[in-house]
Image (cartoon, rainbow, N blue to C red; front, side):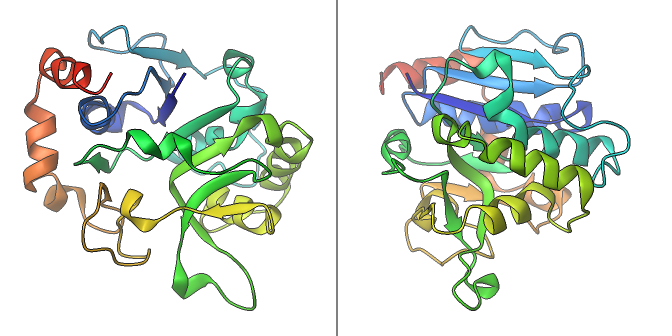
Amino acid sequence: MKHALYSGNAAVYGDMEMAAKSLVANSDVDKIYFLIDDAEFPRKLPDVIECIDVRKQKYFPKGCANIKTKFSYMSLMRAALALMPELKHIDRILSLDCDTVAIKDVSDIWNMPIDGCYFSASSEPPRCHNGLLYCNTGVTLYNLEMLRDGKAEEVVHCLNVQAFHNIEQDVFSYLCQGRIHDMPSEYNATKWTIRCAFPKLVHYAGIKSDVWHTYEEPHMYRNMTWQEAMELHAKHS
């Protein structure tokens, strides 16, 4: 099965739905998980979505070096995916930021050759120095099976004891060197990754939300109904 995941608090629930609709409409994804900090999502969702309430999570206590806001707390949760009992049956999962929009068929993203790698994500050339492969984890295919070899616990521990600027993105990039697959940037077209002529998935990181919300694709998927998204999804399945 093809699994995907978004995480966020109430402030980005609208963006989360928009991004998930675009993925549903442009792929054959089987199940999408929403990591939320509420007992339930405030709106009705289709069966392809499953919500996981992480308010009682045990991985990042209040003293964690990187918990500054509810937003950073939800970002941290992506570092613990391999340890979460709700996801223990999953070997690989596609994690996406809520400011990503699939604009073409991305069904083949789950076929990235990540055997022997902890994850696949697009590199950020400006930050790749002295042999370091630094990646933008806004779109990441995690090899949860391999991360369970002890690397997930190492990542979580590091995030608890040391503060980082880009939180889990920094730690995964630093601790997983030599075991990272460089995802083609057509699946994460953003200002920091390698420019591509024909992107399949656009990432609006670094652009103010009141600006990118007005762009054609985000506006279209924000206004698309779940029924319409599922009808497009059926064409890929």
